[in-house]
Image (cartoon, rainbow, N blue to C red; front, side, top):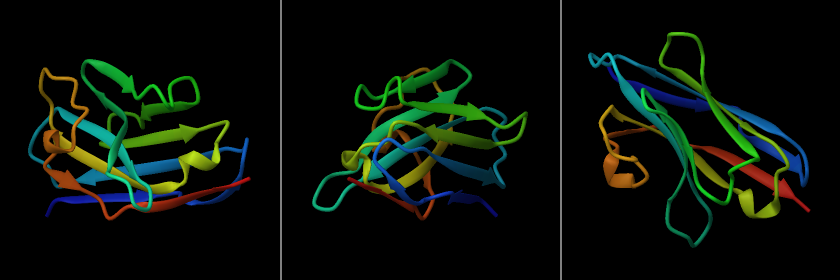
Length: 123
């Protein structure tokens, strides 16, 4: 069956680094868009980054600090987070959908979601 599983969340001091991973399995589609979203307490879920056949894309708030990449030819992606700030604190979700032509920056662009992993950045 379809599975989307995140890992790698935890506690880190401001200025530190953390690496998240997302493994997607059970999909019949050959090309997938895999993205990261985050949701802080009291806020809506927001786009962070995504990767597909058309390359990578980032929100302005993380561009230059975060890097999304694919693990070989498997449906596994890594989000390397550097220079973390307290405002990065949130539950981070991995999202998956069949690859298309859009920017895929909205929550409605994705059909499958992981359970989320907590990232906490202390000051």
